[in-house]
Amino acid sequence: MPHDVFSPRRILLLLLSVLGASNACLQDPASAYRLTGAVCRLTYPAAVVLNEKTTKVIEAAFQHARYPGGKGEKSLLFIGKVTYGLDNLEIHNLSIGQSAVELLPGEGIALDISNVSAVFKGNLQYGYGSRLVNVAHSIDFEIESQIDLGIKPKLYCGGGKVAADTTDCYLNFHKLHLHLQGNKEPNWLRKLFTDFITFTVKLAIKGQICKEINKVANILADFIQDQADQFLSYGDIGVDVGITAAPVINANYIESYHKGLTKYNNTTAVIHDSVFHPSHLTEDKMVYFWISDQVFNPMVTAAHQDGLFQLNISGAELTELFKTNLSSAMPEFIRECLLEPGSPQLRVWSSSVPYVNTSTSAGTAVWGTASGQLHCGTQGQILFFKAHVSIDIKASYADKKLSLQGIPSGIFISEAELSRQNQSLLDAEFLREAVEKIGIPKVLSALEIEITRLLDKQGTNLFDIFNPEVLPRDGFVVIQMDFGFPHHLLTEFLRKTLQ
Image (cartoon, rainbow, N blue to C red; front, side, top):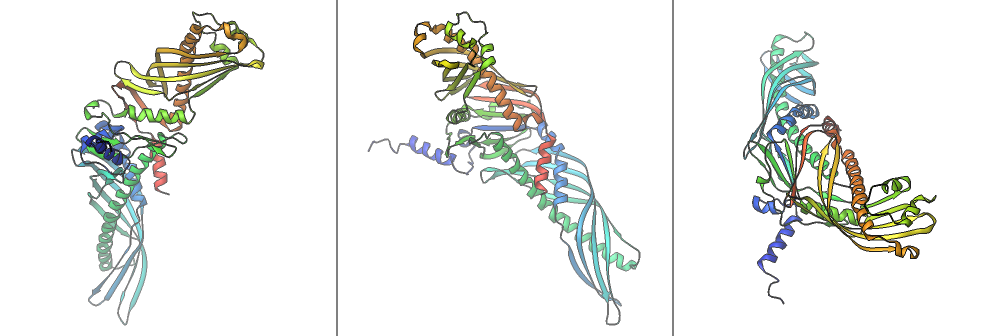
């Protein structure tokens, strides 16, 4: 047996692979960083924007809560035993004054919701009397309330996802005024019921609201992560966005660390030597995404294996492309093909797995091999070629569209096969120049359209995105922007929550 089978390095890699495939979160940040493929940093201004939507979530918690009733009895001199029960407690006319947010370093988030006004309606059944007199009644009531609500959510790792603990929750009642319908009850009875009902309602609200907020908070956390899963999925290709460590909160931002592992054909990628460090991100924008090349490469591999990198161009579109001004003369057999009545067709596809490498100086460098076939009417295939291409790409996003700027750094034609009658007519330089000036721009244009369409399908165009930047760095990309939270996302969440 070779002596290095159980070397420390191999054992470390094995442990990292096992941890990367599990739902466990690591306590040591440095160890977690090595397994992290993607990072999201929300700065305090983003928290303020999100807090503007908090009132809708709090309203959902109040309205979705189920308030229990209560029963009681009391013995009174000359009257006998008084029994009473409270049922059908419902909330109406809910409004929330304002909400403030604060990030508490190492603790969590402080949310202060003030001036919550609501009317609680219900039904009171009561009875009293002795052996000689027995009275039983039912009466509707309303309670006007004004409440301040304080919550300090703590974010932690639960089942490999971001989870929220909102058990640090309190309510202060500034107003709780009872209205009994009708005027038949004597004053002593109204006083007794006022004490009982207000006490019961306080207990019901305190218990149920904080419980419901904790439930809704975790539903929201799951909803956001499910949206991220869907956003990064395409057909049979998915990405595991489970977290590698508990989120970090300081006074200026909230930061979460995600695996970013591509899933395809029952296999999952592994990341064990990520280069992430918090110093890679600043605090000038509202939101930052840090994405490793170790996320991009498995995604690109899966897309290649799934046959997504192929393009067919025919007819007038192909003819128009070949009007591009080239320094090399177009071979006559290609010119004749383009003029034939039968529609010419060019088919291009990736014939090897592309490789991505990002650097600060060049942007994102992509190496790959593309194959192409030119079919010409009744003649069938008249040309097959294979080109090894390296290109430096820089991406940007503006006016809700993705733009890709590419500069070829190397093009090599490794194969070129023509039909027998055209063997002597091939100009290798023309083919290389056509790949550079026609093929690469057309492929990038097609990618721009398809990726923009995919982003729109996932709802990116519904966000108000301001000053987005895509910054290439050594081994990773930073995407930073300011944004406005889309109302549709909150509406969809509340719809599902209240089902």
